Image (cartoon, rainbow, N blue to C red; front, side, top):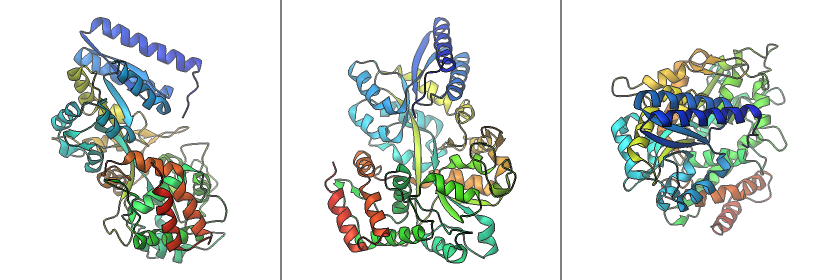
Length: 452
């Protein structure tokens, strides 16, 4: 997302610089921190947290906003110039490539994780950054994609939660009654990243991936056929047309969809806290009724992968090769302990705690996070809007979180395959009856094998 450099934003950045310079004059040490959370309100929260850290440790922090789309080129250029910041808040996609390039100090990150207690972190978030020396970066926060469903309708019809392909299909059979109620709203718009994200989740659920340790890995025909047949079924239970996040949210909010797949950024909207996306299930756009009728599933399974999978977006703190290592480690440790609630409060609806607690209270940070306010036009804690078992499901998905190519060290290749939209296009053509499952799998393998 590109942020316009408005007068208010410029003033905030100037204030951050003044704070950093003032603190640096009084402190013996100072570090630079790159963050992609550059929206004014989020930046302000990070500056405040950094000031608290400075007050406690005497180490000044210069908070430097970096547009996420520029992060890769900025880091590469700074590394070449020997001018990297001390700490970078970065996405999963950079963890292993930056480690391999020498940009990240895995020993420093691993020491932080061990100091805080590796057992206090979500295992899935750690595994995504695992390297031979330990961990490339320190997991900070993340979110898991969710099947959002009408729990009231499931209960009324004696249906099991949509934790498996079979349960989803059973719910469609019972609840699909268009145009009053669609069983599902699947992503079918080929050129939308939303379809790519949903499809990767559905493929992962059945244990199917196009990459292995050596690069491209041919898709298993039997398991991929199960994926295709399932996706066609949920698409056939959807309205016609080119569907993406907008239609899925609108139909669910209107009470006309039994299930959708969405990110957790829908949670505050479900509760009537955002005027730009109000629930329309009743006459009160500020009502939390729909939230009370909703359940979520983060981990779901296909027939060839009974354990299932959750799709997650994880963010990390990386200690760089040019860092004042001890000061950088101190800042990360503070941000993940005394300052962790403040770290999550930057945007709690999309920052699930990857560190659920500490040695004294294993659920300390989960409990604190659930009481952080979410929303835009109105605000309320997630814990007041959703039941504890739903909060547990939201956070628990991070323990089993997966993405194509991470475990195999092929995240870059997997990303190229996803961005090519080959899978989107061929799945849509299969849904539309252009070719059968066997031909579709063969063509996927042919086209994916050409991507580097």
